[in-house]
Image (cartoon, rainbow, N blue to C red; front, top):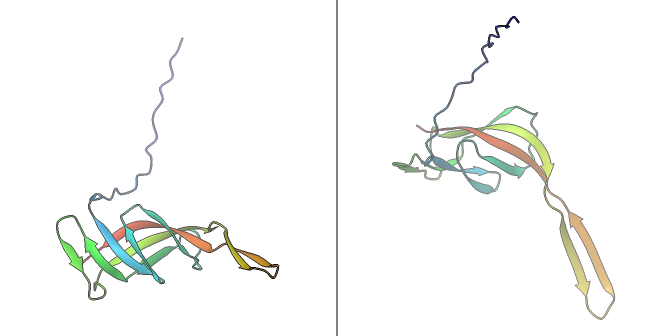
Length: 126
């Protein structure tokens, strides 16, 4: 019985970015502030991007690498966070009810916010 030799084909490797577990940044996107680490996914109000596009936020309020903390006045110059756009989603449904007693007045409206999912690729500080 003959044995067949199997050779492994080399896989493409992506560069590994070493993450400091204590590194994070606080950024402003729209009217909201987010505390982010590298690799986090966040949902923000809808922005018009295509899947896989990069999004750069330069409004960084605070950056820390675990030992040194930099606080902006109001923003850090040279600091930025690079995101990758993943997809559009919708938030949970909200019910808004109006009621007036003694007059048989009832109205119910619903609302679902359009959201965009972003993934943090890199936090850059200078």
